[in-house]
Image (cartoon, rainbow, N blue to C red; front, side, top):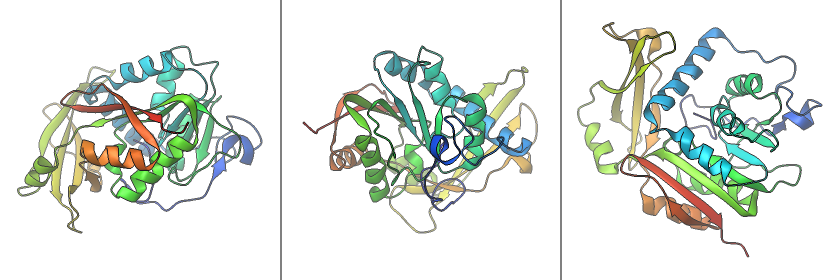
Length: 287
């Protein structure tokens, strides 16, 4: 999952705008300068999150591959994290298209830089970032279950406004996230218990289960809860070392998302998601 503001998994403040190709003298350079540095612990955490998405996001990779195949021009991802989705679209013939990723997590961008040395990676707050160079993206990606990590309406409008500001006239903004029922979210916090929500088989054949627990939002915000996540191997006891600090998630209704999109001068052009996923294609309302 990517970072766009200070309210997601590990609260961070905006660090300003530092574009790899401008700040460090070369397209694809590491956004913090020098060789990418990432600890084994952080790498393991980022890759575990990505494997969870691979296993639990109803094959979101196929969704993004299809959008990449039916669009042209630059591809921009807001909240790109470690570059999982940019790597997916690159693998389906996007090598000749500019790839731009924006994220607040410098460690995740270090992983993205390893995977995508040709990409422009930007250490910035995606709510307020504006490209220093003209950019008209054929595809803007808001995926990787980023949507539930955005808590405030103003932040969602700001993120979508960034997408609209960098969208080509015939381009599309894609959104993909878990569909969360607000009532069920609140009900689950009444009796917080750990439960299995994802089971995956890693490359070494090991079976890993992700367990999660919802607890009430300490600020009492509507449709918001604290989510705790931990991993354990099949048959193993929970390992305290794998438990993450609780982070806020929000259940966005379709009506709320549409209102935010309209405020950003975007309109819903198509909906592809079913009961489990919210998958929308947005287009600009500008003439």
